[in-house]
Length: 71
Image (cartoon, rainbow, N blue to C red; front, top):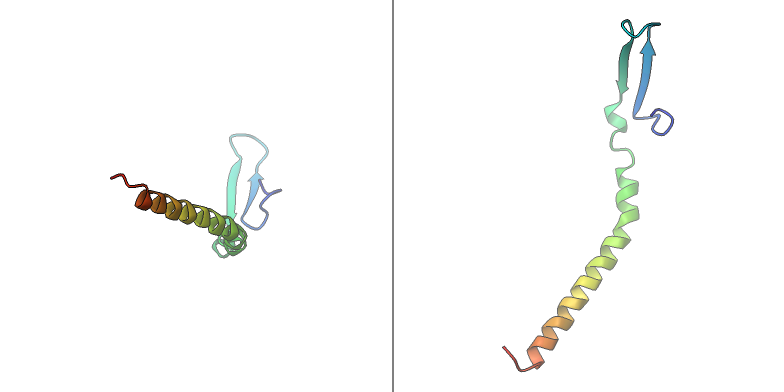
């Protein structure tokens, strides 16, 4: 786990036996949202393209229904 996310959580196992082993989590709250801005900015073009397709199909569907002559 610490190999993939070293800044978020580091796990240290202490003790020689299973009964004496303790687990300590070193959690840094300031690093919790460090990459959210990068992830959000990288996903926004996909959101814009999807919204554009949805808006385009909505307009085409509305125009088709407006001029088709049926209720």
